[in-house]
Length: 564
Image (cartoon, rainbow, N blue to C red; front, side, top):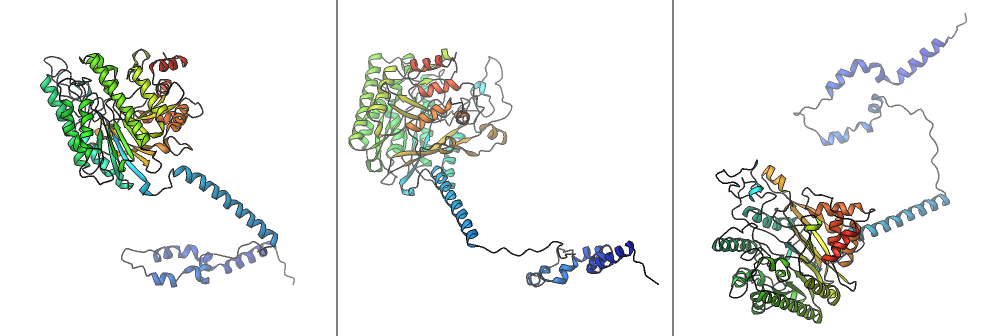
């Protein structure tokens, strides 16, 4: 009898053969529940590391078979041999990739690391300004009353803000706790980056705004308290660091009312600041080598002075720019001949110090409160006013841009409460630059801020700075302070130029209105308000203010860009 093999028989034989090669597949359903139970590890079971190593399931063929691993159904190819041509090709490709990688590393390392010098060649210093201490600050009062507890209308209760602002409120000057907290933050923040401060420049306005309605005695006491308190706190925070303050328009008895005649206010201020400037506890290389009498003589004369540190390699000139300010003549009763004589004397003294620095191969830092240029705060062309008299702006620009640019490391001003910069262009086309630091006080729609700068002590060049700020809205919301890094100049405004100098600021200025460099404008707009509700509407106004410090040139720039 002949046996007939059908297609079904063949399929059954193949199925039986497959099942015999994979015993797990036959019992998988029946044993799955037991396997899951056996593999549970409870908190009471100890994990034996040696047992795990010795019982490695990936070394046991039977265990591998039990999880259904079979020979892959594909053909194994013979391993390719490495011929000389193939090896040479691989070597060329690898060398090419290595060369490209080396080039990229050199390019990006040079950009990311503006200095490759030793730490001993680097110095750090703070620029803090516009503290504006208000001893009558009330955390419950709104900005409509300058955060002072009084009624806006007769026989009415003083208004109350929706939320208390213990550390300050936009539209108001600084309470004591904000100044204390800013100084504390300045001491804590550099620790994380291992930066130590060599000196501090504090460019004026230690006293709050809005004191016009007080009697002379009340005004004197308020001004005296604010300046004494802030000076004491600076000295307590940095007893072994020289601090170089400048006179601001609020640091006199009456806004812009500079002393003259028998007024002894400069002598009073010098008694507060002499310990900050002379720094008897400072190390030798940071203690000013200028004599007490030399500093005192010019300070009592007009509130300006010069000191030398680093063994005379760096001179710091602190100017009293109120003598060149147009507001003084408008508000003060000082006789014009006395005022302009004092202004001319300071200007002549200033040139002499630059000449001495040039002859002695010194570098110079210039600081002052009110800068030269145009006040753009009100944002309307008809309201823009010049800060300085045009003739003093022109002469000062000639000194710093044409006669002595080689000795000037940097010029640092304040007053505007904004993060900004300016170019000073002489009539012959020569230029210089200055940096404007934002304020501790948040009164003019800005977050509190201060700046940590870095300089090279061999090249005597400005390398970089970090802007720190306090988000005042978040501080009020959560009643805690968190000072943050706003930006680093080198990252915020990238450039092939390693230094912050005139060329770098000119490049930055041109990028503000370059349609292909929108990033620069947006970064500038955010930084200018110190990250507080910034506006980008005044692009050409800010550009013209940066480019032209003379009022006529500024207005011509506005006209050229159709700014009404």
